[in-house]
Image 1 (cartoon, helix red, strand yellow):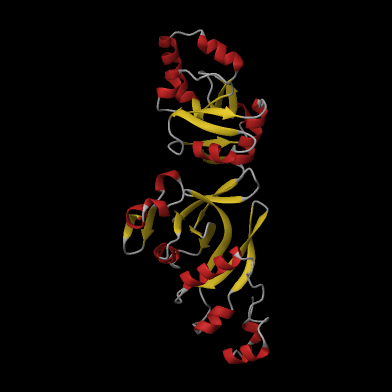
Image 2 (spheres, rainbow, N blue to C red):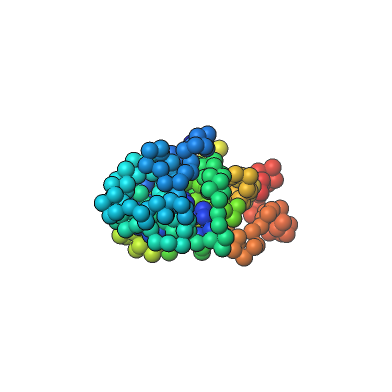
Length: 314
């Protein structure tokens, strides 16, 4: 399986007990490469300017070799490593990395903080898991009260329009149109924006615009944990607002064997942003109704004047 990964994916993935610290070179998110879990020999390797590896490593033996080189030879080696290094170089030692590696702008250089030595096989296995635990979907993600909400729906269903309404209500944009979904090292499901479109939105009739300039950079998030999925559906026939409200359907969406609460809402009705906000707030307080209409007292059901119980599917 082949996946498009970035250096930021590495930083997000290696958190506990391993923590990667970017030291120099190409900044995280600036570079993406395809990593194939089928090509094991290309995943990881010690400093090698002849064979391409997704990750190159500096261990104690490689560091001793680097110390024996002159500045001129280090600069030449750095140039030779550029086309042979995918995501970057990780320094496994407690020694400083050569300045020639830090100053170049073709690959990222990381120091690794770990309570104990890490074998190269550990990184290789993690890369295999990471490359097979990431997918891209068509949708939007907004962070509401610190919780990520993934909004799905066919083109023209109003995903971006709803996202704009939620931004106006003070919430944060994560991604518009294309969303990368992956499993974190904690086993939780995260959504992130592709690196080249952070803060960018496309709205029908308006085109592309920079949401950070309009709503502020503090309203832009690069990634968030997904806590809720909203699926926009077209009503089979035009229904009144009460029917639309009570026939909203709650289920769950599965990503990488993890179930996430999902609500299906009818598109094209007023107040969708407010409804999504209310569902998110209910999640936060653990009071999300499982069977809202059916759990109402009979007198309240009669007030709603719903004579078709079969329409209720909560």
